[in-house]
Structure formats: structure tokens, C-alpha cells
Length: 385
Image (tube, rainbow, N blue to C red):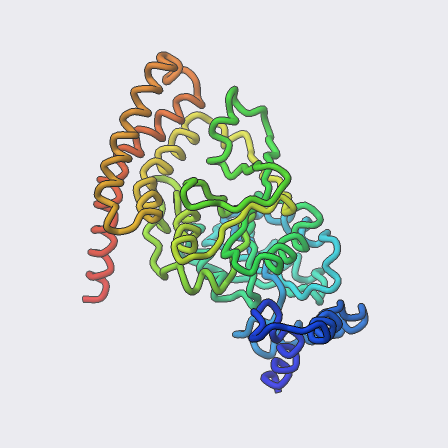
């Protein structure tokens, strides 16, 4: 029964986005235009209900429009605000979408918060829960990919607050750009305290993204990509491009670093487009603890150590030895220039110290990543033997 319903639902979208097999005449174009007129609101509502029922009857099928995934670790006090933002979304009446909370090995009351919301959650927006025992946001996202029941998956952290039109903007952009493997949000900071002076120089590394009011295609040569916070990925692109074992999924120091870029780089290498979508507006809540000097220095250490892996993913295999040497020379140049330009501020100023930490550990990164990869391979081999 579920398969027959799926066939009916698929027939409404058959041929959309596919190139015509032959040149179309005027009458053909007229018939196609009539076929693609928006359906009446009543029909759209019926189709939405049908697809929501199919999501339960055929859990392995991509029958919904969008899955929104919230990855959380000990988010008992942060999760409610994200869920409230999703409850308040506007213009979603004709979208069949779901929300998945991936609990990344929390030890607080996160699961109880979910149960409380589930009791009062609207039935026409499925709210689901999954527990991922492997620590790390990369593992949580991989788990969500297997659970999602839609071709588009939007990732939110538990400190991300999407604007009222975020869901609609995400779905619309995915429909307009079928070659987009991933597209990021326009992210502004919601600061608990005033950021340190010159914070703008490092803001992008704290998942703040402001690239103007027009959509932007990230060119591979620019070496710039969106963060995972507020990122929407095409499930097909992930499954066809991203390996099951991400080398940066495990923590570097006190947290994972670079695993989000690793995912997007794999997609880009396989020919998928990566975009910035300013219509997907979002606030990133940044508490005072994120501006503590020790926290920032440790974070930039991890980002620096992950650099070699993310750099090499954008370089053809045969060019990597030469590229690694060029990056090594460039990192040394950046360190020397930084010391000459800022002198004592390298120690006294937090932002300048973070930049120096990034350059120093980027220099060390090739040696660290090589050791890390060999260690991971040894552990996998040991577990099999």
C-alpha cells in the first residue's frame, strides 16, 4: 500500500528539473506551463497530509520536503529556544517537513526536555529523537543523514536561532539550485558580552557569516566555505560524496575541528556546488565563556591542527606534495609578518594571539595529521583483527 501511495506522490513531480529529450514547440511549452501551475491550496494541503502519512508508512523513502536536524550536547537549557524558533516558522503550511533532535551523548536533562516538547508539538510536523553515543558533532550529523526522510537536510546547533522564514528560504533555495550540494546561512552573533577589540578578524571562525545580501557561489579556488551551523545539505550529495569515516570527526584537544569543512570539501570535489544563501537568516548565541582567552586559544589550536587535512582535500592527489611545501612556506611567512606587524600585541591582545596560534599550529598540522591518520588506521586494523 505504501509503495502505491509513493508512486502517486512521485507522479506529481516526475520530470521536474530534468532536461527535455527534444526541442519543444509552442503548444508543448504551453501544455508544460499549464502542467506546472501551482496546485490549489486545498490540493496542496491534501498532498502534504499524504506525504506525512507516507513518512511513517515508508521510513526509508525521501517523501518529505525538508528535515531540520538539531545536534545537541548537554543542551538542556539551550534546546528549548531552538525548538521555539522552529515552532514559530512562517509560510510552512504547504511544506511537509520534520524536526530531528540528535542527542550527542548528553548527560543532563536534554532527553527530558525533548519529551516535554513532544507532548505539545503539532502533529503535522513530526518531531523525532535520536541518541548518538559517539562524541562529536560529525558523528551526530552522520547519524541524522541516515534518519532523515527528505532530500534536503538543514543542520542547526543548539545555540542557533533561525529567523521566522528560515525553513521556507532553505526549501526554496534547494529547489531553485538543484546542483547545490550544500548552502549556508547568513549568521550574525547574539553576544552575551561585548566581543574583544578587532573581533571581526576572527569572527568567521566562530561560525559567523556575513557575505552580503545576494546569493554567492563559493568557487573552489577561493578556499572559503560555509560553517556547519545553519548549513543545508542535499542528502544525495552527502551519500555520494562523503565517506563513512571522517578523519576529523574525533576531537582535536577539547573539541572537534574542521569536520564540517571536511564534509563540504568532499561534496565540492565531487562536482557539487556550494552556496551562501542570505535569505536563511540566523542568530548564533555566543556566551561570555566563548570569549575567555584560554577557550579561544584552545579552539584556534584545534583549527590550526586540522588545516592540513582540509587544505589537501581541495588539491589533486598528485599535487599534494608540492602544495604541502607551498603551504609550509606560506605559514612561516605569515608567522614572521605577524610578529613584525604586531610585536608585543601577539602576547597581550587576545585576537592577535589567536591569529598567531592559528598560524603556528597550521605549520605543525602536516605532521600532526599524518600521525593522526596512521593512528586511526592502526586502531581500525586492530579492531578487525
